[in-house]
Amino acid sequence: MFHSSAGSGVVPMKEIIISLIKDGYDGWFTVEHYGSRNMLTDAGKSVEFLKNIEL
Image 1 (cartoon, rainbow, N blue to C red):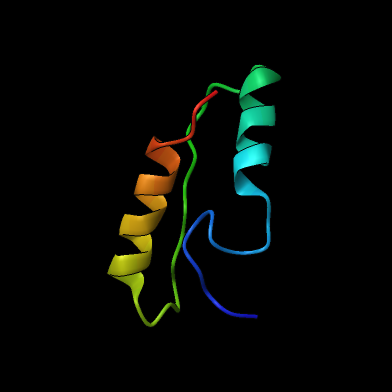
Image 2: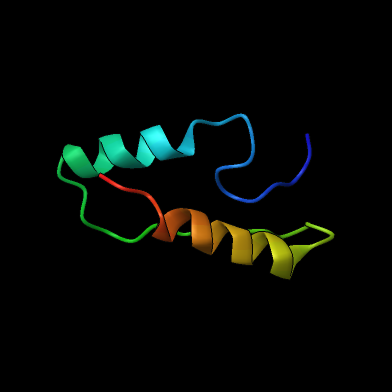
């Protein structure tokens, strides 16, 4: 296992988020990068990924 920013790993984050929203989820999404050697870089990439998801 290794750390990665949201949307850059093997988990289909975009599809999961879109599915949750279409099913009525209207809460917060959080991303944690504890243990990452590049925590701030990964966090920034995750924010950009989440902001750019089009429904």
